[in-house]
Length: 399
Ligand code: PHB
Image 1 (spheres, helix red, strand yellow):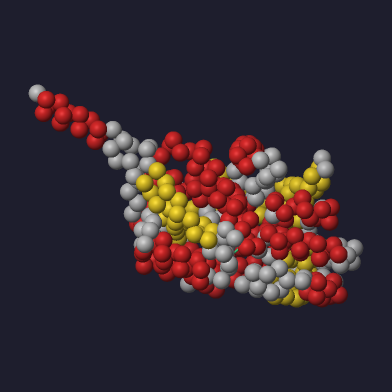
Image 2 (tube, rainbow, N blue to C red):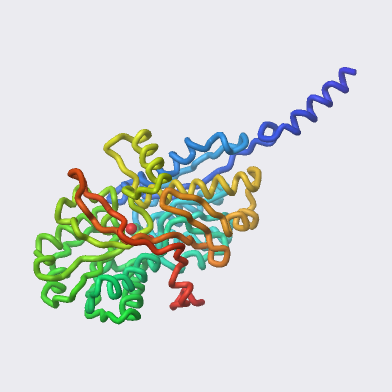
């Protein structure tokens, strides 16, 4: 009789979901935690942690262990070493993070060899997901903002000529190539294209901007990797009086990042950009997200596009853990990610099952001043944009 009871108890225990089989899923997080790009690591991590706090109970008893590594710079080598160690020594189930494209690119072959799903929370060069079958991206592709801004600049803003300036590394090249293609397909003409130094140091933009001012195109399309670079772009544009000289600064939303906006001052008013997120979006899902963010991190803080990407990336990780009931297998994880849909604070998003890249709404934003604050105000929207680089099969995107 006693034996019977013990057997029954054990069976009941095994049948209790989430108790007997609770797993700890190891997630390797590779972000910039120090140096000039530390603000990006902080944003993304705050987004991740917010989602975790809000949804911990939904994991059916499973736990997530975050193992964090600092990729420091955009160069690729430090991130690659970190990923190697996360896979071989820590035996992580999932890799995530990746602010800079070269860091994601250098790590991709290791994800393939180690068969570890890699969920990209920023790195935006269009062809990154084709580097490994285990990559899915929840952030953006440079072509989504660049190509659409090109079309919008010619068709809606009516610009005939544009110069382009870019930080000289893969996402910068993607951004200006896509702008040029969209702009010229819609009847505009690009008259100059200027590489403006690498991503690591913020350069003195003055000589590049002076060259554009002298050439006097209708518009100047600039890509820089957000952060301190963006603040310096808007400052230089104003210091040189380019607006008064008739040259209008436009770009992807990286140049009006929400966390940089207030520091840019009134000189930012009127800037028009294309992007997938603004902290000032009136969507109820976004208002709830921003309110929760301020409650967690302080009234004087705001999420920006990287924050929402961390949040959505963690939602994707939760989806994988729940779908696989904590038993992470790379093939099954990728199958779960393909076609995954989420009602993000930025709007509805989906992972394209064919490309493993994000499909999302793109917004036209104009910087306005309201109630003493600068805002990225939504003035237009393009629904459910797939990566134009892959749609049009351009260069490496067509391979
Ligand atoms: C990138 O390295 O892919 C990158 C970094 C920062 C951005 C955009 C793209 O704002």
